[in-house]
Image 1 (cartoon, rainbow, N blue to C red):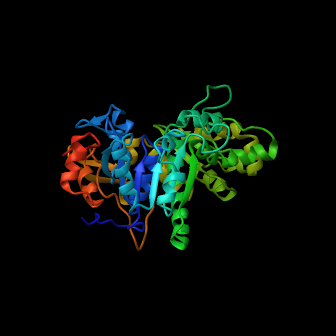
Image 2: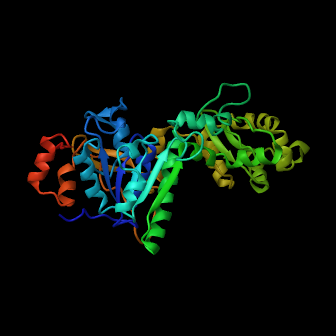
Image 3: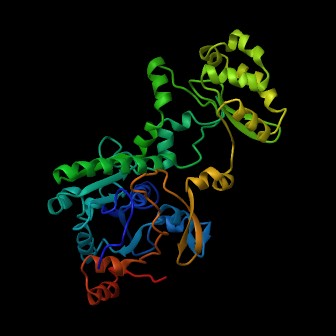
Length: 406
């Protein structure tokens, strides 16, 4: 059976994803949107735990699962059985990449660690995502986004200001960032494989992903010996650069250099502030940031968000509305950039999903379809791996493989 046709710069790359929840599936999702064929291997009993992340559900399918796994093909497989492991090895024989984000030691206990697999598949890129990485004193710990945000410093710099309870970033940023870092690592390893034929381990974690997001604050701490704290929507290095309340909502202002500062004052009709020694340069504005916000805030309350955004755009000042997620999804720029697209799901029908955030001029990527039902493509994947229907029927009958039809 021929492989399914794929499009994008990674067309021809084959990925076996043994990942669940979010970080690993993000890695597979990114590779798949750029053209890789991604085969998602799920456990027989219930599949990926995100299938139970409800509500909301659409036609009985978890909305969270469908978002993280769109464009992949799925097989449900009992990896605790020897026959299940044998099936996985058949899949890996034709694969470039394996993605896993099990707890430390799980793959080794299954006899599927890199040391074992690399002997039979020396070109295999083995991508491991975890809470804290494969080495160091925390390597055995389970990791979750909330824990990683706390330990990476992110929660100490997120929130309204000093004296308030610690706050995490709204989205699971360490999961998502770890998945993106893993995809970047896989691509670097694939470039090496193209030159040498040699595979390797790609290892990253939620903890490292969170640390990566602290570049500005880490630079400040390293230079001063003082740990920065939360600043609401404000910037730790430039001002004014934050959200302001208008007559009917909120907008963001990015007057982060001297030119834009003076443009902002012209739009506000507050040119006198240019002569205030507290605000004459960015150094002074940062030293007096609260006073600066108090001086600017009354101006913004005198008109609506739409009025201010029109004036600021005309005046050349970077600014934008504070949109909720539904408003973002309806925004014409998000639609024009195909960040919100439609796919056809076998149970749900037509539904929206998010698109590929990287565009390619010569080899455009795309979302190849919806997320699979549990075991939806088991038979097709096994046929592709060389199994005859009678052998597939036997694997299904013995509970090694699960098949679900739409």
